[in-house]
Length: 223
Image 1 (tube, rainbow, N blue to C red):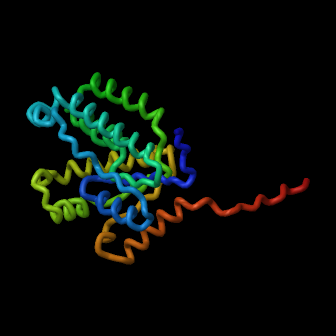
Image 2: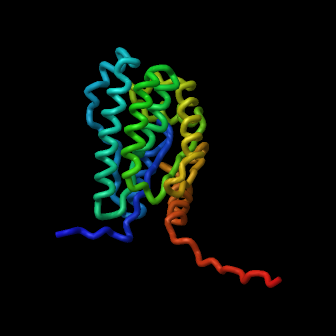
Image 3: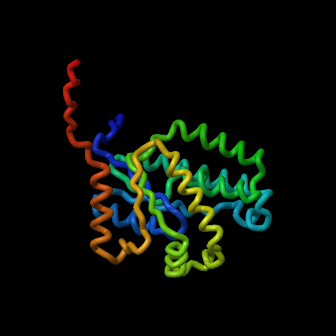
């Protein structure tokens, strides 16, 4: 039996730097709207140990593995019959993290071009989200939240690294045209604990997803 697409389905993706609160907001929106949350895939990357021992040699292999998992994840989102909200998108792996490896000299130009061509070729066939929510925060905010969640493997993340990723996120959002974007400033905003902050962001997402109001076309001026 062929399953017809659900015209009421919404696909919202949450984007943003490390520690900004993507997973938290994914859960908040899933609960508020009754959507299915999709969190970051946790499949172990078999290239990760090699990558950390020799980043230049193994960065391409590692990023291709991550990209393949993101693409599988994206397909699951598209195929899900109901509305979904995603913690980090497939686009960020290529536009932010692979790009950063190339800029830092840890991925050769040849490998980066091959990777980027692969990404662009596949991206052309991916249905984009209905809304991209970009959580924007300063490096101080990111460091504070990273410290609060206390993950051992994040302790050595430097301010300079977060600053570079922030710059790449800003450039990416500036050129993004595949769907509407809701930019959410998060400095001084605690939507995990502050009910007013949660209502504020839920209301912003709801407004972005509602059909545009009726517009009246003024008659042309007679000459």
